[in-house]
Amino acid sequence: MKNLRVTTLFLILAAMFISATPAQASAYEDMLLAIRNDNENVVTDLLRRGMDVDTVSPQGETLLMMAAREGKPAVVRVILAGMPRLHARSPIGESALMLAAIHGHTEVARMLLDAGAPVNQSGWTPLIYAASRNRVDVARLLIGKGAEVNASADNGITALMMAAREGHLQMVLLLMEHGADPKVVNAAGHSALSLAVSRNHPEVEKLLRRAGVTN
Image (cartoon, rainbow, N blue to C red; front, side, top):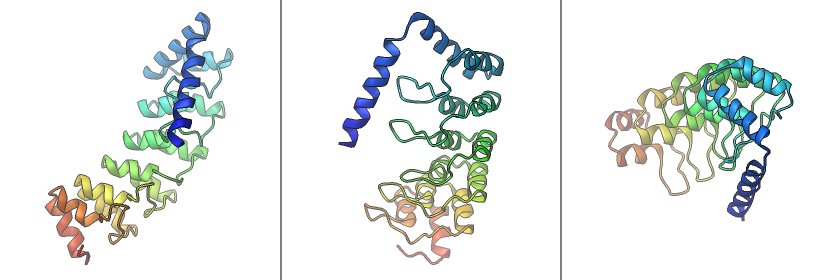
């Protein structure tokens, strides 16, 4: 049922984009280029001329999500001034903060948090995203803003499990220093230790065993 809703939303968004007038399509293309180039003047002008700050792409990403993924602080600042929906998530469940986190855009992540973007949410979280790519600075920022270290995604995976699976020793250390529980298991029965072992990350395995983890 969830997949049906996501597919339906995507088709609606795609239809809206396809049916746009040439002028609207041109403005959208100008906005995309401005975001990529971090051109705050063009973004400001397009929003001032009436473009909805919550305009979405055919993939369901808002302007804020696109700017966050690209790591463009100047553009993010302009878009935030337009009061976008900070809780918005794409059809695959990604928020602007999650995209900033996974790509390691610390400054953008800080701007989003200061504007009120949720650091905790159901399902995949910004911290789990940061852990997956070893974005230590972003993870430290998120934790400082109250990120739940032991929060889990729908499949039960935590930030610590993700870091251990990918062999990110520094991330594992950071998470454990802030209370990450290495004994938690996910829906498939895997723990941070078993994931580290299965992926052949001996340093992470050694660290977890020193912490008293046995399985």
